[in-house]
Amino acid sequence: MGLWADAVAVAAKDLRIEAHSRVGVGHVVPFALVLLMVFAFAFGPDSSALPGAAPGLYWVSVLFSAMLGAQRSFAIEAEDAAGEGMILAGLDPAGIVLGKAAALAVQLLALEALLAGGIAILYNVQLRSLAVLAGSALVATAGIACTSTLYAALSSGSSAKESMLPLLSLPVLAPVVLAATKAWSYGLAGHPSFSGPWLELLGLFTIVYVSLGAAVAGPLLEVS
Image 1 (tube, rainbow, N blue to C red):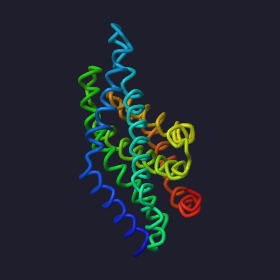
Image 2: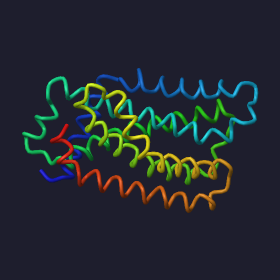
Image 3: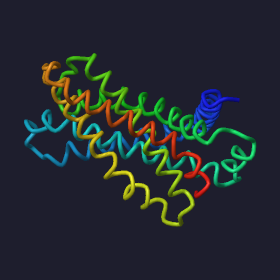
Image 4: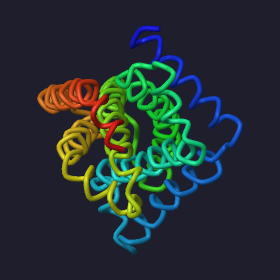
């Protein structure tokens, strides 16, 4: 099979595992919603500050949820060496990484739709400029999913993988989260034209991260 066929096969496998285990529904979704509620309570009675903080808190919740999903993706295969089996079966390493990232991205997009409703209710914001919100979410999710998958693969062989993944990925993902936050800020405020430069920056970082991810997938999986 070619790279893209391998990626589709791996993504389908991961999504089937998630559909049967329902870990995302049982663990990641509640975790993300609790984060939003904790952030809301942290502002105390000053509810006027919540709408302005909503985009940043939204993407922080998405980011930490992505890390949980990426860690689980490799933890499942570590139990029975399924990751090594895919390599020995001749699957393209880039296809494996892109497939796992695609499966994570699909789950994140579903979560993001739910969290968008959460910030509308908890933070009293109106979801204006849906095209900007949806477009920036698609691009940002691709970058977050690919980067989280790469660093989850790198840290999966470490005994401190739970702490290694945030330490490695947070600095790299900061520009993506910042650009997505700014794009959402203008979108929620009803000024979609101001989000253009941030969408371009978001697209640039996402293209770089996805391209690098495909390029270094082989050596990375061998090391892990």
